[in-house]
Image (cartoon, rainbow, N blue to C red; front, side, top):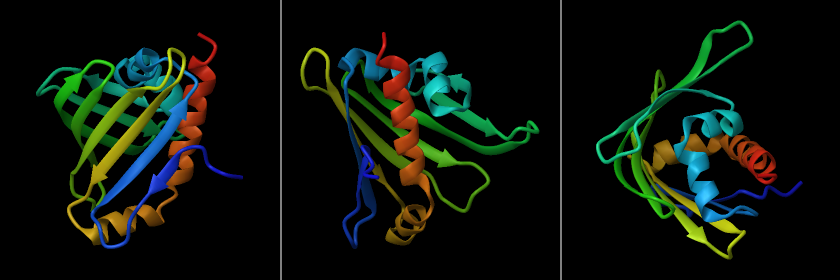
Length: 154
């Protein structure tokens, strides 16, 4: 089955691009990334902090069925322009991966469709390649499918 969320990773570069088109207005797509309640629904994680402002921060964590935290991440927001762009750091806690920088670009295609392009820059090509070996492509695709499903009926 073809993944609707595309991952582009050019050999020899420290970056990846995550690209997805949605049948959602750009304003709603942006809210999905900035409103804690919506983010929790489609991402399947608990938001413990979300300060959507320059120099603000965010943190979320995912627990297993026993309540143990199995994944957590945090970052600092460097720029936020509603319905257009978020520039932030992203750090997976308790992993060997150093902090990454993410450029999230939100694009209005029509009044009812939009696109997100996320450029993630890693400290090294090796860290990027290690991340690509993880099943994150399937995970982000599943999360984006939930985003479309949950918000598509609004």
